[in-house]
Length: 422
Ligand code: UD1
Image (cartoon, rainbow, N blue to C red; front, top):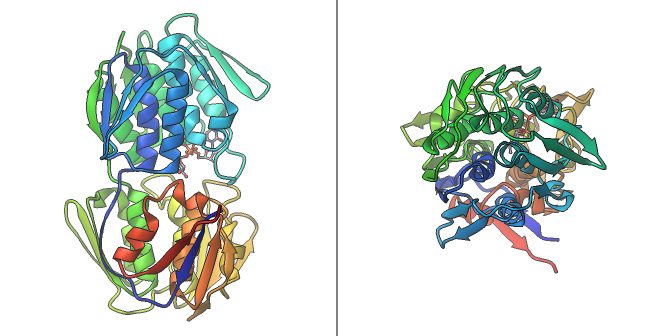
């Protein structure tokens, strides 16, 4: 298994470009199943999760072509198989979002219950409840969801009990080809939901209200092909900003969308960063200072994203003062705490939703293990600020969500090396 060697103690400084958003690209790739014409996507990040999704689309019978610049063309006309197997769905929860499109276009689908990061139980009850309200017959047999509509789904009014990103996306996609109007209430408002909605509009869907908590979809009989550019990755943007801030450095992140990151930029400002932003860039300067401790409470968008909790917690570990980090989205998302503590941090868990972080002026490099995707990057942040060498094992987690991590970190002055073991 590959390892990442981080030699810490350097102040990050420089400029980098952000990749396309993983969490947009994945549901948008699922949406290609809804059309009978080719869809060409640009700004698709070159990531392990994207490769898994492309493999899944291929296994369903879609024709997928990828050029040198990662423009991905998917032609879903020839789809003959409606079963998404455990082997492909277990590694990545987002693949469960093929359920809505397959069912909507083919009247039947069989999709394995999902896996993904080990960050709590993560059920799919809201996805299933919504599809049932649209007239699907659903049963769960041997770890697979079997859904049938015997024709077109029916538009419905659906109130989701919680804000779920994947649930909103799955139902929004299913409703595009349903007969009649669907109203989804208590929707997730994440920018990636908006991006998917915009792509569906480009495919000829009739959707309004995406980005608010009520989305209205008037079903159409078919969707067409289109060219669509995936939005920039706000989590990647925020992650590099946090990394630079933790080291007291300065960085300019371009090809991004600062308006999707407001809560994170506010917290970075609270931590002492001077931030300048334009239409497509964010520049951060800590002016060599140690960050100040900042309380964090994760919440659905536009609140502080759970996907940046671990990275900010690592910043707090070296900040001046004590902070409270509260996770409200997932039940078990503090597995990075014991690993960061191996570097000499002082983080104590209070139950499984709150971490109390006493900032330490210095950390010391150690051997640690990546536990999930975003948590892995928190170990990189901790390693960057620590004296000496940190060796991060199981970095395949990082490769699921961060493109060319060594190269990008190198560009901003980090001393990071991948050791490939066979
Ligand atoms: C997406 C993101 C993930 C991010 C998360 C929250 C993608 C590919 N992944 O995941 O990076 O961390 O949003 O912003 O976009 N839940 C239920 N029942 C359901 C669905 C969800 O109880 O039917 C719960 C989950 O267990 C979790 C919470 O709702 O506690 C939020 O989950 P959800 O928004 O669905 O996350 P994902 O779409 O899986």
